[in-house]
Length: 316
Image (cartoon, rainbow, N blue to C red; front, side, top):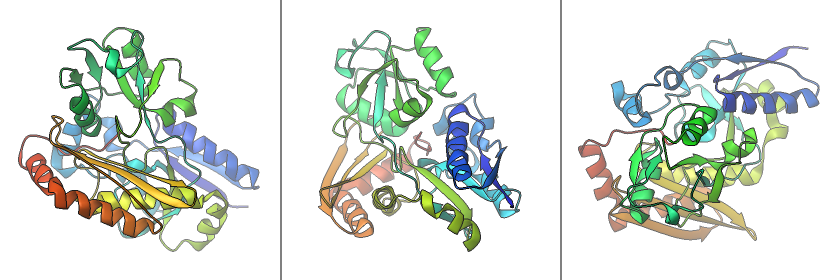
């Protein structure tokens, strides 16, 4: 039986994700190997992610390019990504073969001393490398001192425990997958912090037209996760393509109806626009939400971000 070769980043969370998919594939009788591939985003660790995105137009795909290169060259058969790392428009020659069931897409407030964002003292130091998170934090607490936070989950939590930050914001999905929820004090609602498009979801990428591998992966697909993330990614794409500005999008099925909550915000927290709507067609719903936000002035926010010193980051 041919071995299925999975490409993955080398972080603890990325390897958990790759091993999770490998275990499911082995349960179907497949032989599987994992190949660790170091991406641009992994190699540049001494500057905030926003600045990484600004260097040489690397805003899109800084955590995926080298993996896709290996996939295109045939060195691996599939890649396991965090869906939010994938650009909304894949490069020619690739396709998403499966999106497995999604973990909680919300963000988590982590602290050793404070139970809620509201409890932080004035001027508290909060760690985050995401402009999306920064913008929404500033909208509710303009007094907070927000500082860049890089490194894997363990590194970020250790910095919190050592007192470098009063609190940090991380994706709850990663913390749950790694079993590191001890310092999670508050799961943030979409009203406080709308998640990144695709957050909590995995994407299994293959070479376009590779029907054999696609068929082997078909059992991993979850229709609900695909519809929700499809809506979010269409919304994001309609607002300018990729994770280049502070945008939040969370679509959720409830009683057979898809609801999408979305946010576009200036990095300093104001102006901030919100939209909420329901529908049944993921693509149509995502585009309608984007059009509504643009019609209310999101285009002005986006132009301001592009035109000033707010470099385009991926949204971790």
